[in-house]
Image (cartoon, rainbow, N blue to C red):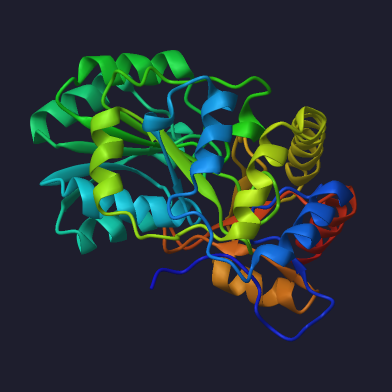
Length: 342
């Protein structure tokens, strides 16, 4: 299995900065909804989660036939890979390492298009298009904003790439999109696109596992043929409409995240031997010039801090690490500890 964030030790004082979950958590009304839905766990949930699909259809303004639910974003990544059975795919890296694993398990030949950290992970659209056509890959995987870099590619650039590669299917992971944009943007589903949305990160329910994918009907149809029945539990299904339509929560989360992001960048840039990379999400990628991320995490663990080491990401060396934005107190404590160590 691939390595992921999350502290699983016994230190109850540990501040875990390795998982990218909205620090605002969820409101009392969501907790009440969860408690009330417990009465339904003695019944089977809907086989394909049709009421949830209806809610998402209304929210996005697209047909139900262009939407599929999953047991978290990871479930849909693997479902897409085994359903489409692409001969070859190009993964834009550094990025979430489960794309490559899911593709390889499905028998797909995987190529990497590595963005250079020395260039700020900048994507040259024309160069990417040339590479796609040269390799003649059948699929392209792009995370936007990217995990772990935080890099965001504007919608017009992605539309240009997609429209320039008509014979290629694009899997666009927008699991952190709500942190990058205050307003919802929907792709043209007449194109060969599949857009993943995770509901676990922004809405702070990773333990419940919930996500959806929308896109071209031909893609959704193939995924439906391989969909495992009852993949979404009744508690998660009961929350979809409430979560999507909590506009106040979305606005507050977006504004609060931007404040924390700017504050964190300002503080962490003051630390010697640490480089901070631009981000449009709820996390920051950093590089320590003196310590490897494993060495650094060992030192920080002794100070009750846990970070996400990034030496398992293609395109990043052993000195990169990622931190999530929890709050001002945690950011200030991280700065203090890194200054002492550095």
